[in-house]
Length: 196
Image (cartoon, rainbow, N blue to C red; front, side, top):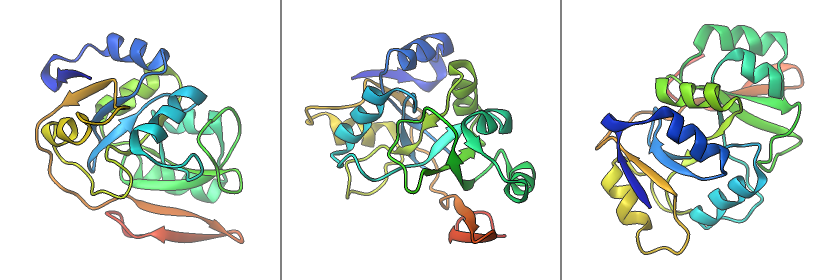
């Protein structure tokens, strides 16, 4: 595990790391997350191995912009209007997948958001593909809120993140609100920081 201080980030190095199918552990808006190229099957499988989770349950993705979301997902107009209003921000929306995402899907649907975290948006933009955004913890354990917790959580495990970006302790925040369409109507699947 390589540990990088968040104040000394080399964006190009991180993008090359993602292009090689490696996994980063880094802060998101809510907790530390496992970040990799969602179109790389072996990289996505490694995220599941790091978490100790079976390769069947999906997890959310992060895109750099609405433009990138449209490239990889079918975006109905009613959901597009909400995306334009609340992105970047903690609103995750379930969309049908258009192509090439290797995360296991439910009814060909995945949850995606445009993150309010500038570094995550920049990584997704420079990589040119959506990023995975599942919590950086072993499956069944609580979320982690500091680089030190992430290091301690994985140091004795056989499979671990390739790089940990240590931003120190981050504030606990409400999870993102998750919405989608159910019979053509907007449905709230999880109530989080954004109230619709």
